Image (cartoon, rainbow, N blue to C red; front, side, top):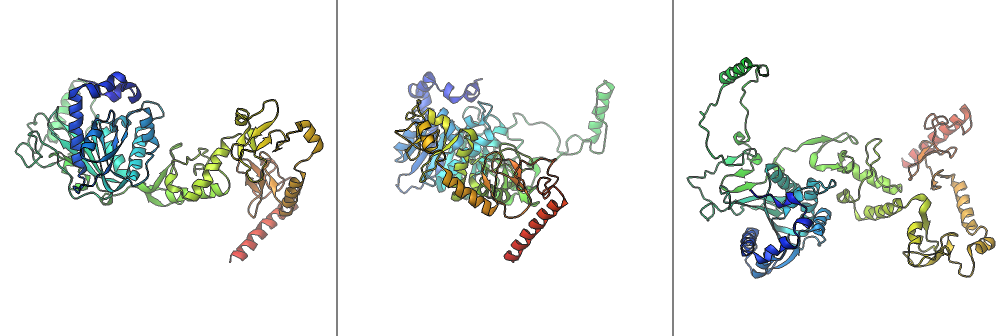
Length: 541
């Protein structure tokens, strides 16, 4: 029995030069690839109007399947199975949305069901692949995947992720009762499910019909393999008396047997006996249908933010920590964090995990995406390593370490060149480059180069009663509310005294021992807080 290639090594290692040479030198492999490609093209059911279509060949290899597409008069784009291909699977296809008229794949998708690294998660890889493919296909287009699922669990994983991505369709099985000729084709439709899908070939070579050896009954999910030999049991099965007698015999032999109860020998209802056809996936004529989304009972989950019971499909999953919330609450949380100048974190109480912009892509509008990207760049640079371009029309954030490694950096001096505007400046003096002066000479001539700007900022801060964060020195203004302020860098400080929040000096959110030092200070802060809230309420009314 041969070993599955995806279990031997990752594709970039398995498909070496000797293995790839087989796809051009072996006439048997060439014939098999051509036959599978023709069958996949047939299942695409493209309109016979003579118009060439733009198709996607996923896992094109040496181009054998692409030759079949070209012979049929179609244009195609090939994506190869390699390390870069799998990365492309996991991060989305770089193709404009809605331009592909169809897609085929021969023996490629099952590679995503195996984790070659500890960071690989088959479910997430399949989710990203089917999601990006769904966006690339035009409305009503088909995608046909010739797959070799290792077991039932792997088949269900592929089907479930395709369904969640929005596809409809099912699995076409050619020669379902043959060991060697059995082939499975996953036929997916972008949009609504068509009324009929091509049926699979039976062992005689033609399409399956009602035959004597194959009835058209439904086979449950847990009973997909054809039994080699029918068991000779009566319709009633083995009853309670037989089970109790066998248990008593086992006890006499000294075996540990569970105690008898009213549930002993109860009849369990199999999936085959269920009358709800929405849960039936397989049909023994070679067809398997995906359950339709609109007719199955959706599972409800409780959102700890809004306390509503939400459909599981509408829940947001934080990949970094595993917490789940409704998508609407997470979207509002992201908006508030970005407006406050922070990178959105998990809304769970005391959870310090940060949300990823890729995981939140469906919740973001273009405006929020543009706000998030600079925050990511800013957070990647430590506070002590940050430097801004001194030119007023630029002010680009850079890293001192990266600037020192630049080709334009002069190590003998502090001259650096901005990555964005290209202007030269002094990294030590934080001013445009002083070409004829050294840093010491410039500082003697300009002891306080930013004094005027700092004076204006201090005057504005005193006028509006702003406070500086004791850690990052960022200016913070409070309109109303408690005196405990959390800066965008994560530091909590007292707005009354300006120091970091400490339990010994700050007993609650409105009392500060440093501010007044007595009950009068507490009353003053409380009065100002209530007054500000009343004024805002009056203005809002």
